[in-house]
Image (cartoon, rainbow, N blue to C red; front, side, top):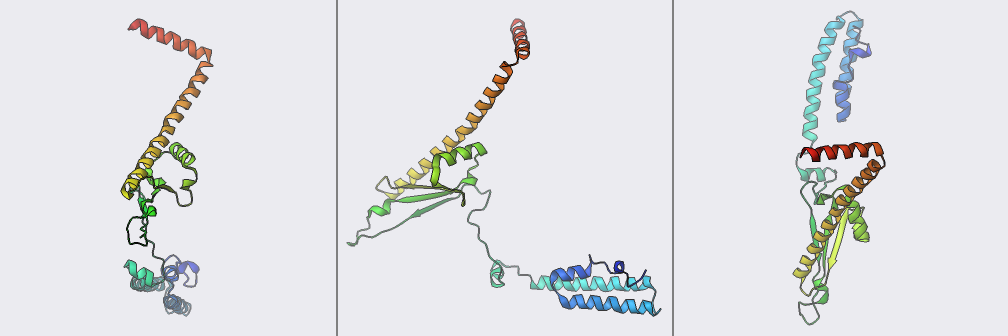
Length: 225
């Protein structure tokens, strides 16, 4: 085995891992060791097999050293990620945790100091549609019904209410509207099923041979009963 042969130094081992870690110093050490062993083989001071074994030992040592450096430089706390420049993302809408409702309201004080103000009654409800568990057909029906109240970019449905004088009543009104929309959207599944059944029925009725067999089978079952 020739130490200068590219196969002598497997790029999938230490060198590649050092490159991935971005540690040029370790990479240079590995290349220097490879050249040193290659020169010794060329001078006849060492057999290629022996040089290969020595290089493998050195390679494993460099891999361990490189791994330690990577672990030391890698932050483990979420706050450290922000300090090192990586973007810290906080998800207020984790998938799979059910519908996420977000309420928005305002408090306006009148000049007289009275806490009551007409704008205080308004309530805004935002809900993530993907968490409602609707089917594809139900989702399409919901989007058609709500129109511009659905933001496809945010996948968010917005419902507002200021019908009642008190804010809590308007909150309940928003929830009632949401439940009504969900119930109406789920009707799409039944409509699709009925449409499919009607289509299949028409196709079968257009087949006289099938209808004749069906008729004979039905009469046979009735006679057996």
